[in-house]
Image (cartoon, rainbow, N blue to C red; front, top):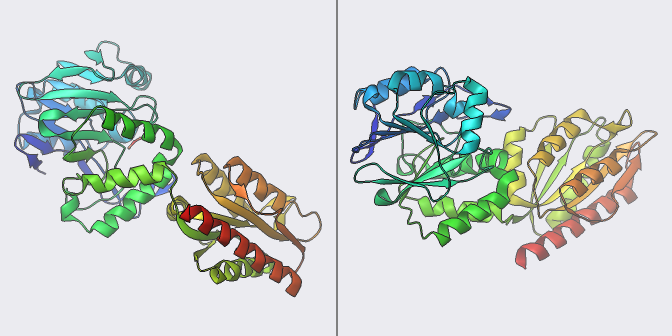
Length: 399
Ligand code: FEO
């Protein structure tokens, strides 16, 4: 296993996890990578480590360039175990002179590994370290993705080592954005944003503002997952601008599940109404939908119409499970509505509206409830609901 040269004296030395399919609930259908980077200068520096179990791969790749014991500095940009799981083993192997990390990262590393005596050096935004020809400039990015997170900018390389941000769960033999299928990469980058970064969109906005204020020239972005952005760094930055501003397409998702097809009939009537208004519609039946994929659709769609029958005074578990997941990812700027059938108690529409309130959606109408099976009048109401949602979606998207 060899290092991959990124630039002169600058290498990718991470690990490729081709077969991971579940990353704490995220369906990683294309696997992932745990990226680490090696910069050879007067002070040889390693940026991040890898998930525990991949440390031999990391050390072999480093060994293809230098003896790992020659590494002087270790930079820990993020302590989540997919990057710092192998921290202890790597530190024991390389014996660094200094370990640069934020205060929260030091506290987190101590809480994970209980090693007080390592040569930690806490850094803050603006802290700079000269390593020879190059400089390391640290930028704290709390909550992108954890409280400990930071990025490292190397001005002489015009390169940002961005840990989780700008990443993708995407295992490929290509290490650069120009060596892989761009459509596939952007799809994975969107899914990654929707399922990992979305709740921290305000922090992403702040980061993008800081990058502008600090006049950082960015020719290359090296994230901790996926590929290095050397051809299209502007593309992923502009997508982060879009996603973190909650800009959406004039599209309506009908997210629902059904017991005896009454709610499904209503869902298709809502779809008909939205289609009449000329917007794109996607039907998402939660008994068969993949949550990870569906969050990517939520990220991009302005309209979200929710449907569930009432089961045991509540929602179908497939619906409540997904809505709990979605709520935690804090989508914003949506237009919503609710519908559902019931047999006797009929709480589902009220509960669906509560979820819509919790994500601060603009709710159209009170929702449509029907006892047992919708008749033509109810289905016509559902068509009208679809029209109203679509009209509001178009208005907001053209504003
Ligand atoms: Fe890739 Fe937040 O770890």
